[in-house]
Length: 238
Image 1 (cartoon, rainbow, N blue to C red):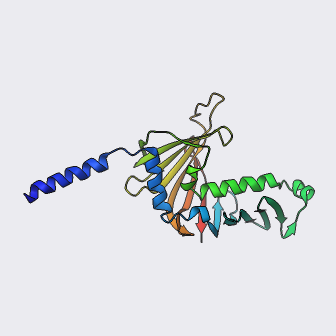
Image 2 (image 1 turned 180 degrees about the vertical axis):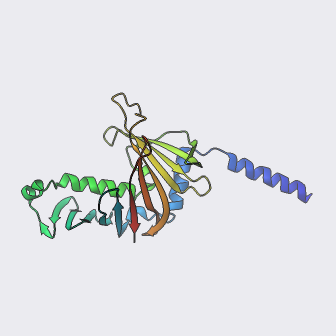
């Protein structure tokens, strides 16, 4: 009798885990892994990202994000130059080697408030993943794909965006055992919205750092899709 019950239980387990997840279910499972306490919406913390690239000196960026207070700052140091972009409830401040620049002087150094907004969007997007995939204008395809990438099995979400948000097509690769996000990849599109296979990049994520209770990738290694050319690595320190 016990052996029969064991077989039934095993079959039930295999049946349940064999069921295909919807894209929304996979996203929720990954968010639950990375942000189990739902901290992202109230994120308020500071962390450092060190970027290394071939044939160039490292760049160290100290990033402060306070979502409830609509505050963002990135202070980047490379060689002897330090630049700081700050957005405080939309009010922009630009600093070059501790000197606050007016609009004209900032423009002369190719520093603008538009760039401050770009940095804000860039860092809050990358370090807010996968939670940011629930933002308005983000479109999840219905089907969860199963792919092998770098010899590993993944569950994959394909993401497109409303025209006002962006035209790139993104793919997010999740570990099928714990739903951790381990790779993402994007492609440019032509004027008909078709992916250009020789465009874009992929990013390999490894190790983890816990920031404000959120499991974030500690190491991001960037490569071109075309030719797998290595571009650089971002390492999170906290």
